[in-house]
Image (cartoon, rainbow, N blue to C red; front, side, top):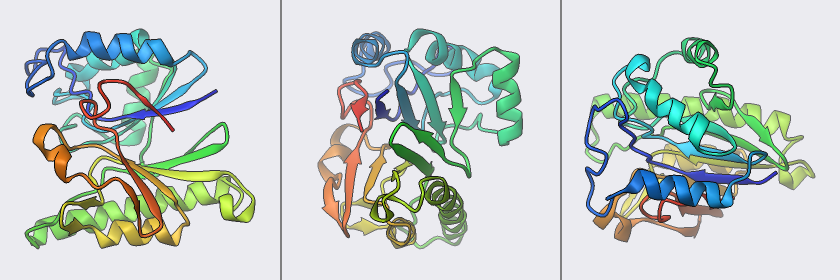
Amino acid sequence: MSLFAIADLHLSFGGNMPMNIFKGWENHVRRLRENWNGIVGESDTVVIAGDISWGKSLETVLPDLEFISRELRGRKIILKGNHDYWWASLSKMNRFLAENNLNNISFLHNNAFIVENTVVCGTRGWFNEANDKHCEKLQKREETRLELSAKQALEISGGGIESGGLEVCAFLHYPPVYGGFENHNIIDVLRRYGIKRCFYGHLHGTAHKNAVTGTHYGIEFSLISADFVSFTPLQV
């Protein structure tokens, strides 16, 4: 059983937005389905790091979740992106999955999951480039959510890879490092919990050139936006 990751599917089977709103995204759903099912098996798991759908409610996002559940292979672990306005409480979302028989989808929200030899933790993350008070509040909340997830991950991992346990990997929607901007709150949590690999999305098109990848602060950062990975899940 392998672990894969991708972000920013931006689905719109409910007709909320055009499917190819970004340049270079023509036929992206067909490309995504073919590439995904070409490498992901039914026993594999894929983390989808936010911006799942343009839907505004669970009811409008149902066609997109059905596509993810029934047309893309494997188990899926989903976290929130900045465009996922349909996101609700964990109990409400889990109930919605059960009611619609979407039993191969799980939500990463203040929790963690074991996938073979890896423990998955994460949250949306946030930017506060303008030092805005509202953004500062959101950033603090996301820091807390990452800490809750990372703490649970470390507990179920057996202390993390440095203590002979399972590796803990973090998945975010927003990049913790981008161009000249660094979210030290998020980076501090990653370092405090011994997380050595972090995967993120959010960046599209020309924004790719400012993406920070490779090892920084002892953490290996990887961009997994759908258009950056050519609509093909990246094996973790």
